[in-house]
Structures are given as structure tokens and as C-alpha cells.
Image (cartoon, rainbow, N blue to C red; front, side, top):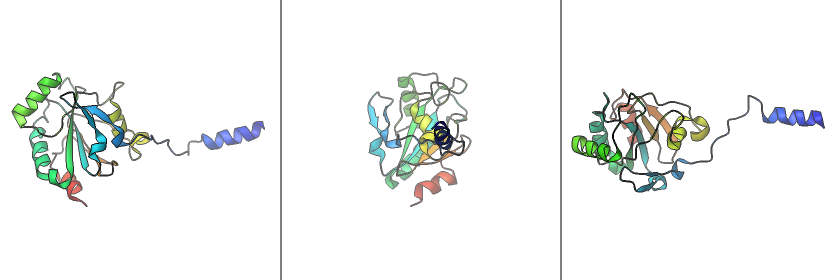
Length: 182
């Protein structure tokens, strides 16, 4: 009996075991917008989603302009951008939600959905970013958030589709090709 238990235990918990994948879907998330209203990610079914962690005092802050242009250009292609202000890198997003919203509107005319400030790394990482960065949650890849304005792609079926570095423009060929791909 003891050897049977040891055998079963060994089979269940070997290093070759497949990772346990989270049952949480991208569409299960519900988060507050920058205005404090609940936003249900289930409403995004059938759309390609570009998720970007943003900051108002970063060398990449001017990417807001390209993000807005991309959003307006491809909105009719079942595409949406979601902006997530975060203060995880060099204190480059110190403002309140109201200050961030005002800054984005006044300086860049941002019309894509923006959300309440969250943490995108560390011990207090928001569950959405845990899903985006952990293979056990997204089922595809482990990655990390390297800096502000990193872009994550989620396809029209809610599947993790890739990430693009902060240094790449939001309208880079990789992102545009992904948006228009059928």
C-alpha cells in the first residue's frame, strides 16, 4: 500500500507534470474605469484588445498620441485599447485618477477606456497583470512588465496573443499586422 501511494504521488507531482492553468478567463475580469464605473471585460468578446500600462511623466508618455490615433483608425475593426495608469517605474505616475484623466484628455485627447491606477508588478500586482504575465494564468507565456507603455495583445477570443516592448511605437508593424489579421 505504501509503495502504491509513493508511485501515485510520484506520478502526480513530477517535474514533467503539465502546469496547472488558471480557470480564470480574460472575460471574467471586472474593473473600475478612471471615472470609478465598473467595466465588465465580457463586453470585449469578439474584439482584439491592446492593454497598455501608462504613466504621465515618462519618456514614452508621447505614445498616448499614437495610441489614440491607432484606436481611432481601427475601432471599426473590432479593436480596442485599454489604458492602465501605474506608478511602478521611477514614480512616473504620481497623480490621482482625476489628475491622470485630465492630463490624458487635455494633452492627448485620449478617448479609449482608461482605468483606475493599479500596480503592474511586485507583491501588489493587480490580478489582470498576473493573468497577462503568468503562463499558469494565461495558458500561453510567462513574461514581465519591463517599463511603462508595454503593450499586451489579447485576441478576439480572449486569448493572450503577445507583448510588445515599451520602446516600440503603438503603431509598429507587429501590432498593426495583428489588428488587421483575420
